[in-house]
Length: 416
Image (tube, rainbow, N blue to C red; front, side, top):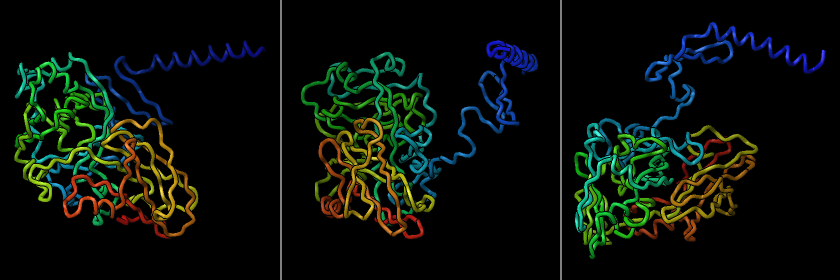
């Protein structure tokens, strides 16, 4: 028998077997997932919902990635939500540079507003404009849109000697793809008047949280976002609309956005005056805006399994509020020497950038450090440089170099 005849006979035989399976298969609208000798029936109901143990679209039960409630770690810098909605991103569980929406950190002064009906929600563009405008969500979606990847970082995301794990040190930052309309499009349509120098974004939350943004920034790259990572912005991220202000502190990214006012000067809200702008050495209305270059080694890092001797791939994240990451340097000897890490993929502007460096650990105690240099030639400062720059003020951006101490038994500790 020729190879061609044998192949044809095998095809006919296997085709008959498959036909038999098809005849015995469940009714249309259901499918059976086969893995080894076990099968999980997935009904094809109108909502595509699956039976336990395989929840359709859910992570595997072996994947432990969950946001970390602030109440579990007692983060002293946070106001603390009584229902535990304030939560950290599990940085140690992330891969790549995009943070899934349900793992994005949450920080808010009050509970999220009750469910906002997107059909009833309105965005008002007002203040010093020729034509005050009111937009529905559908109207915004008919305008030209952009999709851009940007990180958002809370003011509380800073190294501290009290923190014991990577997530506690750096869990209040995340990076997503944001989709929406540039704020400049809406302001231009309203006709901004001469003399406008600031805009005020206001929230529909229970305390009317709002922040002032310099007008040039508002006309540059600020997004009125209705999408995050390919789906509508989730409720605790500001559904149906939020501001995304690339490179500025998290407080500027107003959630549940209801109004943008064009102004001739900043009009600080209650929360700005009491929490964000009262720096005695700079005056009561001092604003700190772009965040400087920052990086953190995510492996090895405190809170993870002990390090094994031999070959290891050091990995981490870097970002800058002033532009793109240009270089990341890593030291494996406590800062005595530095090596250029490899940048993984393109370094996007105001976004997470992955870096890595191969390293063979000999089992001796040491300290690992990383420092980011952005495309503005700004260098991430040491703790001493950071402290000297901010003098006696509580700095609004915590970007000093984060050190990890590795002991001879492989355990990793925060050495800040």
